[in-house]
Length: 304
Image (tube, rainbow, N blue to C red; front, side, top):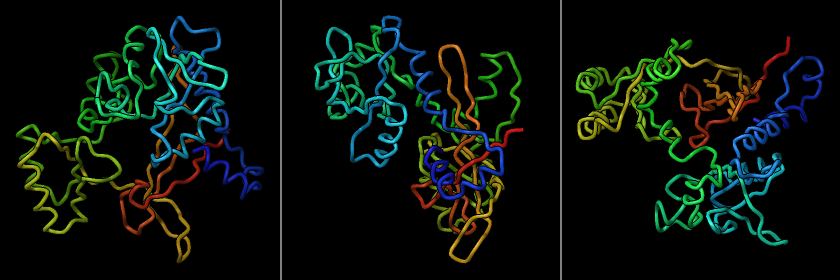
């Protein structure tokens, strides 16, 4: 989002001069404020925040470096951190400095070799002990990755009703959980019309888009569903919006979706007036993931 906006403003400053585009430049400040607001009670008045990355070989390392620079915080790897007396410190040229909040871009399994995978070279031994003692905040919290499980999505209306005693404003896309016999039967009978996704899948991999699939691919997925139904959900094939896109043959419509950014701190929630529009650059494709050739666009919210 930030990179897209910087590039657009550099290339087309006249567009921003003519239109009242809501700024997104405050996103790093708002993110830092949200991170500091959830610091442990034992932290100083200005808590120290660090962004934890798996390292230079991670495909998103440039983004981690870019964001840490915008936040004005240290970019650290597991080897840069040490736990002493259930407190977390980072190594600096001036000695050890306590860290209060870690904005982590490392998966749960690799955070602490003493608690999770013992072969992890990315984590910090003892980190979870410091976390359990209340001396370090991990954002996002350990375990929140369950929200990435696509089956969880189907329960969100019930979650909203249970915890907020409210009816959801936005309706869910109808979702069939293949682990349930009735849903599985429907999905198997209608594979050619549905989108089937792995519940733990990401990046657009491991999915079937029925209307665009060959008979052989559909039958292969049918076998997968029969062998491991709990690993999949299915949804209708949605008609994604399209947006004019520059292609080698000129402007042409391409399918897009939107990822908004919402920051939740201790006492407030901020909705960023922009977002990341992902675009399927291949003609007719519904796969917007960058790992499969998708691109991104700057997203404008116009001030009234």
